[in-house]
Length: 252
Image (tube, rainbow, N blue to C red; front, side, top):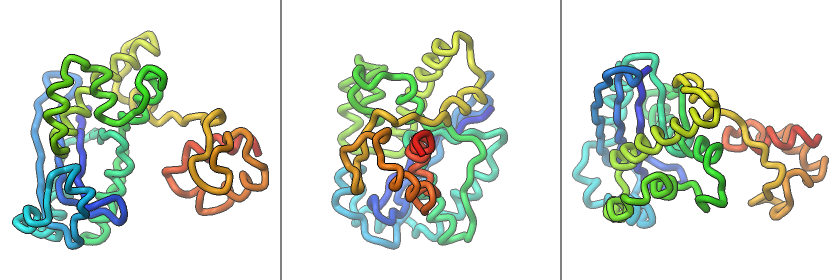
């Protein structure tokens, strides 16, 4: 199995465009693996919002010195399709990064980015670390949970986010989560089993709606009429609602 642990930095959260793509390519992770860093910077077509610059530290002036995104996207795509298979893509809240890359690949290449195997360390963290022990599942929070002795390093890294630094942190987290997976299942899991476990759906019955007309109401108490609407509308087709849909189906 080969792993590509990656992250992106973007112009913002609404209609995001890539500014930076960073990844660690771990070839033959089950044996004497090798590691390759993959880093791309690019000038987006839309302005970088101030709220994003203060996160990743890339200003519009700095980005203006990069090659155009239209020139770099084909390079990224060609790099990815040439990596050895089977290949598992790993990221923290990976669907956001996949969505960003899909927008770029579709816009400039008329192609889609649909990895066959993915591991979301955010989902794994939620499965394996009780909320009352961590208080939140951001990349920084999970990293500090596993590596409390590296707080100074974490603070130094967080002067600015970086796709390659975040990828490195994600890989360190992944290895610790793999250990917890093995403990939970009382055996050493192969990576294919970790992939399956990462994709396990969450039962949100006891959690509350964070948006919409029933905000503050537990999912298990959602009126049946609203459940029916959710399950028969575009809401059910949106991948980010997969756990909500899974939960609501229990109560219709």
